[in-house]
Structure formats: C-alpha cells, structure tokens
Amino acid sequence: MANGSIVYFEIDYGSIDHTSIHSIFKAHTMTISIDDNFLILCKQAYELDLSTDDWGEVEYSMVDLLKLVRSNPDQRDLFIRLFTEIYHGIHQVPEYLMAFCMRELRYAEIRSLYVNECAGDQNTAQFRRRMNHISHVMHAFDDEVWEDADMWSYYAHELREGGAE
Image (spheres, rainbow, N blue to C red):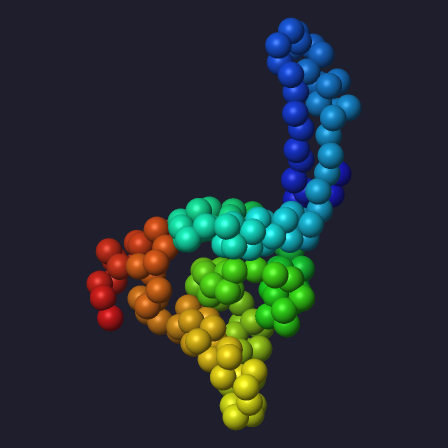
C-alpha cells in the first residue's frame, strides 16, 4: 500500500469473532491513490454545489479536501499540479473552492498563476468573466482577515480573532 493511501472497507460485524476480522479486512481492502481521492472530493463538492443552495453542505467536502492535503505534506508537488489543473479548468469544482483552499494552503505557485493572469491582457471577455473569481482568490491569499470569512464556518475564527477589516 502506498504511503498516504486511503483505505475503505465494509464489514458486516453481525456474527464475526475478533480473529476473523483481520482476514476479512485484508480481503475487502481497496486502496485509493491520493490524487484519486483529491479528485473524488472535488467532484463531491461540485455535485453538492449543483444540488444545494446551502454552502455549508459544500464546505464539508472542501474541509475534507484540506484535511487530505494537510495530512500529506510530502505530496505538495502533486497537490500543486492538481490545483494548477483546477486553475486551467481541467476539473469541475465549485467556483469558490480555489479561494477556500488557498486561504489556508497559500501555495505561491498557484498565486503566481493568478498574478500572471492579471498582468496579461485584461481587455478580453475571458478575463472579464473571471474577474470576480480572481478577486476572491487574491483576497484569500492577501487579506489579513479574509473578506469571505463570514461565508464559511471553517474560517469564522478569523472574524473573532481579527475583527472586521
């Protein structure tokens, strides 16, 4: 099993003695790679975003995504690649996922993508469509107290600790 892999198993404990549990566990183990788990969480957040108006429900998936990233610091390059793919639109995610995650992760490589986009031609329809998104992500990186902290219970501590800007 790869380091950092997530293991899922299902056992019917109805009539199993403790000596059998280990052999059942081994027989029913499936390993999911870290990047597959990342993409599953992204897809879950996206599907929840489409199916509900309650941002709090979507927040759980994004917090799980942060937990996955934080629990695998040795996979930083993998996560930079995956977030770069999100930036380029390769994976469908809620529009606010990048800002939510970058508020905590603060990957300089991802910030550079947005800075470079802002330094480019701003007189395009694509840039105008993305202006709001870019602004939210840059605020996530740069604000002392994030302007969107009040949207997320996960970041509510910023409002208590830092007061309003």
